[in-house]
Structure formats: structure tokens, C-alpha cells
Image (cartoon, rainbow, N blue to C red; front, side, top):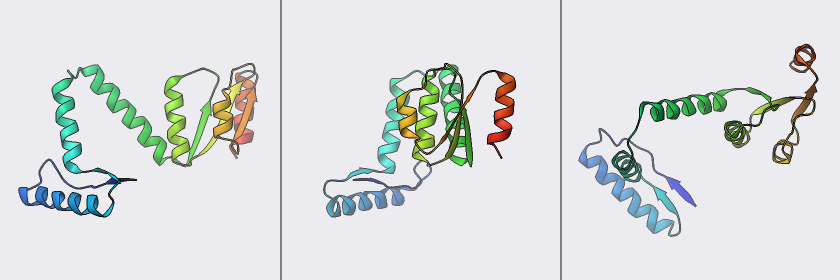
Length: 145
């Protein structure tokens, strides 16, 4: 079991930090085998990461881009996905789609390799094969009603 204890950290008063220690103590006693992620845990991770890694502008941009992307997936009502090109990033996005139980429709060009992991992970989703851009436009119109 994993328990996440949420609360302010950066601007928390010492009294609030002490409360977190109490929460942690009680949670550990009640749930002996649980992993407990506390605000202190998160703060320590942040500080250790900052000390161990030199953050370049590119890394910061990449982190923000990923967060932007995944946040939008989580808040979307429908995902439309083209599987014609292989992409590691798409695999990450599809994991978030699956985890958040989002509706998704897959499109892919005839002859494209489609991983069994995708068809197995989304057995109830629609998979639409197209032959060219004109066919894709027609199939999009037909399948997005």
C-alpha cells in the first residue's frame, strides 16, 4: 500500500511541519507495511535532485513540455491517435490514456506496424486503417460522429 500525504511545504510554518510528522507517525503505526510519501519526502527529493543535477534550459523545457502534454491528456474527453509512426513518447502518452480510462480512437496507415501491446491494452477501442490522406479525411469524418 502507498499513502500520499498532501500539504503545503515550501511556505509551511514549523508547526505545520510538526503536524506532518504526527501524521506520518500515526500512519506508520496503523499501516505498518505502507510506503508513506510525505511533504518532507517530496521536499527532500526536490532538494537532492537540484543538488545532484545541473538543470539546463533544454531539460526545463522538456519537463514543462511533458507536464503540459500529459495534463492535457488527463483532462481530455477523447483522444484521437495516429499510430503510423513508432514513437517512445506516444507509448508514454498511451500509458496515461490507459491509466486515466480515456476514450481513444486509433488511426493508422495501411502497412504500419501496430504493437500487440497497443491492441491488447485497448481491446474495446476503435482501430481505423486508412490508405492515404484523402481516405484519412473521409474516415475521420465517418468515425468522429
